[in-house]
Structures are given as C-alpha cells and as structure tokens.
Amino acid sequence: MHTGRSAHWVAEDKEVYNAWKTWCDSHTLKDKREGHFPVHRLNGDALVYMAEADESVLFYDASRKLVAFKIVNAIAEDISQGRFYKKSVRLDNPGFIAHSGYTSGHQGDSQGFRWACNLHYAKHRNDPVFLKLLEHRESSLAAFFWNFARGSLPNEVTGAYTSYLEENALPRMAPGPVDFEPHAMCTHNYARCIHKGVCPQGWMFSWTLARPDGPSRDGNFLIPGYRIKIASSANSCVGWLPNKWHGMTLRRLGSDDLNDVTLEVGLSFQLSPTLATRWKMFCDTCFDPDVLADCLEKLRGEPLEELDEEGEEWEKDEGEPWE
Image 1 (cartoon, rainbow, N blue to C red):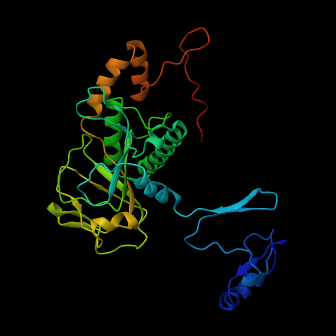
Image 2 (spheres, rainbow, N blue to C red; image 1 turned 90 degrees about the horizontal axis):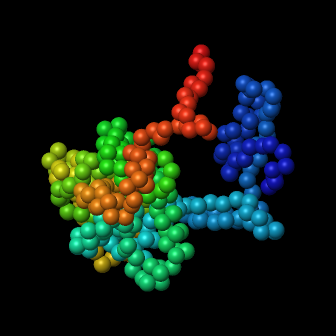
Image 3 (cartoon, rainbow, N blue to C red; image 1 turned 90 degrees about the vertical axis):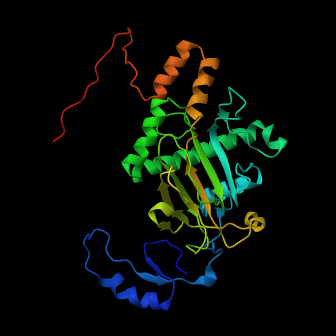
C-alpha cells in the first residue's frame, strides 16, 4: 500500500479503480499548477487499524502524541449517559427527561431559582470537580444547539425566545454573549401523551440528536388539531405551539425496557412560566441594587456607555464606506 509520501488518489476496490483511473491520469485541468495525481488501490491487509462506523477511537504515535481521532455522536452519547446519574422529572411518562441549567426550584421555596439539583448520588452532589465539569458540559451543549437554532429556525420562533429572555433579563447557562438559553431538557427514549402545555414565550422546540434505528412507526410527534404527524429522525428539529394539543406516539418497547437501549436522544428548549418570577424574587433578595442594575442591563442586551480614560463618552469610528 502506498504510504502517502506523495500526492495520489485512493480507490478501495478494483471497480472504483477502473472507473476513475483514466480521469485521474488525463482529465482536463482547470488549475495546471498541481498536475495529475496517480490512483492506487487500497491494500486492506496492510492497515494497522480499521475504525468501524460505530466506534470512537483515539490514535497515538510511539511518543504518545495524539495524531488522529474519531468520535461517534459524542453529543448524543453524553446526553444519553445522564439517565444514569440524573433524576427524571416526569416519572409517570415513559423514558427519561431531566433539567439542565436554571430552574424555578420547589414550589415551596420562595428563593428556589438555582441550577438544577437533580443528581441521584451524594458522591456526585458533593464532588465540586464533577459539578463544575457537568455544568460546563451542559451549558456548552445548550449554547451550541441554541446558536444553531438561531441560525436555522424561523425568526418568529427564535425572536420570541430572545425577546422574552431580554425583557425579563434572565441569566443564561453560559457567561458571555446574550444569545444563550437559561434552561434545557435532556431526553432519552422519552414520550408524552397528547396534552397541552404553557410556555411564556409561545414556542417550544426540540432537537433529535440520535435515532439509531432511523425513522419508524413509533416514537413520532403528533399535532392532532392540525392532523399532523412528524416522523422523528436524527439531526432534526421539531417546533410546536405548546398551547395546542401535541404529544408523541408510544414506542414498541415497554417502559421497563426503555432504559437498556437507545432509540432516541434529544435536547429541548422550554421555559417554565414561573422562571422569570422566581428570578426577580431571587435578585431582590440576594443582590445589592446597584450591582443588580448593572447585571440586568447586560442581560437585557442594552449597550453599555463607552468612556475614554478620563471618563468622557466617545464616538465609535465607523470607518470608511466599503465599495
């Protein structure tokens, strides 16, 4: 097998080799600086390792330096593992669904606004390193998919979220720009009956991150009032109005078997109708008024006054017009 010491093409079998050899040798070049490259057939017996389609692997050289890697759906697997150490919030529904980020807390706690406290085991709850890594991982995942949503979903959906977040100056799961969500729900094989819900910004949406068996006749989304069925598929997003009847079809496996196999992994964005109220109560109790005003100004996305070294406001240089 050619070891890559000069540029060349590779065909994995004779059929592909024959189909491309003439083109590789003599096709008309659009850029003549590089020329033609030969095509070689892959000798599978000479391979040292074959990373399978469903395998995650890291490759190191003799000096233990990382030289290559392959990660299979690490995001979905990360969320899926949460069912082993986090508490599901809806115990009467099949599958697993758990809070990530800020929640309103218990109804009896007037200052209940806090990061979700839903870990099963004391060893995790009392481990500051585990908690810090978990918070960082969950906020990073939510930030990634929230920003993905902002670039791909209809403006009336993301705009409703952004307006509500800024209007109520809600904190985000990650520090920095305001375009993060304060809360997300992680799901594994989750389903819920046809129901109506309440969401203050008017929209809810969910990313399906993994669906190993592909589309099927179960675990799909329904909006009965409009007679709509949405087939669930990996790398897709479904949005709906929670005040309309909606829900999911039951899966082929019974509730006792759903924790042992992965049929679907998801991440959804929804805001509790009490989150803004609890946040305001928390702020009034825990923050000095001057500090609070500055904090809320930043969360609302309001521009900060820009001053020079002597405290005088200065104008930005808009630059020359580009033609």
